[in-house]
Length: 295
Image (cartoon, rainbow, N blue to C red; front, side):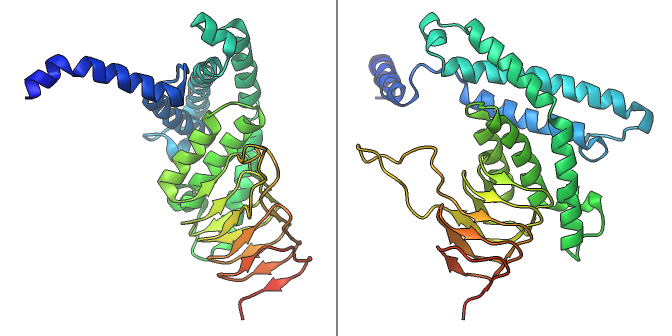
């Protein structure tokens, strides 16, 4: 039986399967598994460039750190350019018609890569504030090294802040793949489109969800299981969700949100200096200085 299937059925089944899946993927030329590996490599290169003494595989003498970081940045830039060229070509009608990358795709990839790489120092400076927030916000934290190596929230945040910059530069697909890597590694789901201020800390972290249009101020602390999500979606005439509208909460400065709290809706604003207790369900705004608890 199997020999007959291999001889008579394999080819027509392959043709049918290709036609079916093509309906979902179209003519995009992105290699999914290959791109996932490249995303992992890009994350590792960039994190190592920012914190070489922590993330490099091996001991680095201080006098060799500049050359190590230079090499990591160069490799990351080349890889990012390759990845951006690929995803831009996959969404470019001109490239799809010609079957190759067009000059426009290459020029966009070149510009985006340069702008992103020029942002690395700014991203690192913001991440340093997140390290401070973790150290000051968690009595169990003994050192910056412990936070960098043992805190899943910092891993998720470092990847998010890199991905967010690419999102700001309108890079397709790659930012979302990066934050999903963080999600799978840490259990913390932060959409790259979210806006998060300095000195941000997530304690424990597992199960935290922060939606695409969420805006979070500075010196905000979340505990595990917090959801900052959408309450409902605007629909178009065909009944499909409208893309790009604000649908997630705004959180002010100096806010603490305890474990399991759920805050929903694009019209929901949490005022500065507020405290939201554990397991609270909130779909309306609260003024500055509020203390909201389950009774």
